Length: 155
Image 1 (cartoon, rainbow, N blue to C red):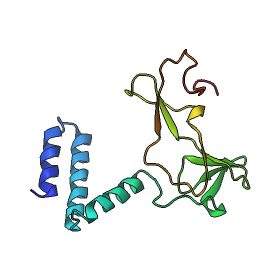
Image 2: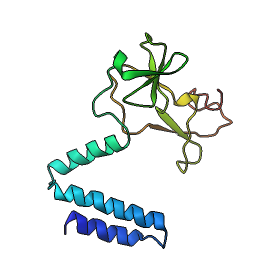
Image 3: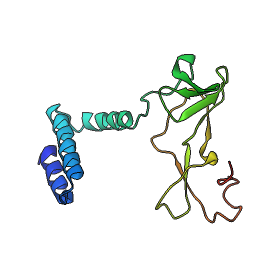
């Protein structure tokens, strides 16, 4: 079975239940799978291409951030955002200390939902290889002070 046949069958299983947006999404996904198939990716090249496509579609850089001046844009009052990774910031143009504002995500409902807070910020050292996903932290009890010393609810 080809990847396009497999994708078509899987998309048929989820269907669209008359939802125009889901029907369009299924169509678009099938077009992307068709392009992938047309390019002839095999067991060797497919995982490589998929990994790069996934990172790019998630606005994740393929190579580590360097922290060089040309990677930054001043977004507000000497607060700089990295052009290659929108979750990385630094204060002051000459500041070598940066942070990823989505370095950690928190759940207080066993992973059903996640949230960020000031405690989500993690320091960044260059070169910085941006992770695929933030670190997931599971909170035992928001009223207890037993959450690895992280103050999650204070600005």
